[in-house]
Length: 261
Image (tube, rainbow, N blue to C red; front, top):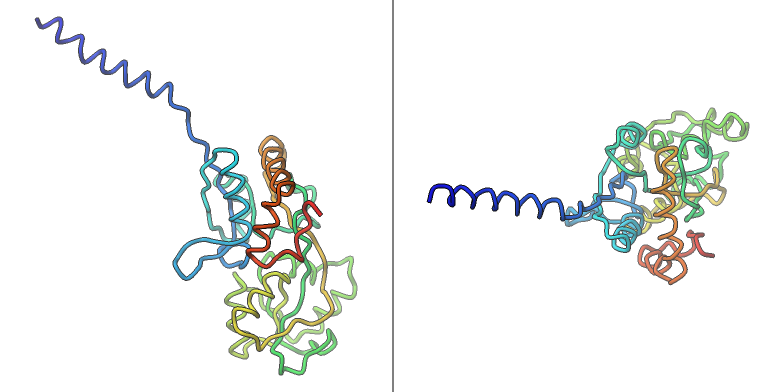
């Protein structure tokens, strides 16, 4: 009797082990993004992380059977997050230009430009009007890189003409200082600029001249071509069947996207 009773727990343990071995491990896809970068990635009024890039990532995960993990990061710590394996990619209005050899990139999917935003009644209509003015920019951003571009004497001269150049952790804070009058202008991505202006019901304008032009891509750890290729193929499929453009329409970015055109 005792021997037969000992067999039952062993059989139960074997069943649990077999079930565990037969269960396929679910793959997660962790996207690193700046949670203060609308409309590409940000926290909405309900406390949810939303945005164009996050919608694209969600669709990529859906088609590959992955679970999406939205991981907000400090933008100036993005390289550490990627190299440590905390995130699988940087996907959030991430500029390729000037970083071509630092990451393994997807194909460009957005044509972007860097612009200056000013109050519409500030009397600032051209770059020359920024002389002596207080200008804001995000740390480690493409706009800051453009202003510090030693291969562009025009941009360097423009930067040196400012009364001050303040670096911010995020553009929302910079825009708040612009509203308060602590800044005269903010240098930023055109997509973010459009969102900020529209969300405030006007009162601000972009200068006509661009500071720089660039393209966005999805950045993976250098050498991680396997994951890049899977994401790339899925994005191309989304462009071919119209899903990519549908998501772009949702976020008002049809004029900016370049994938599949």
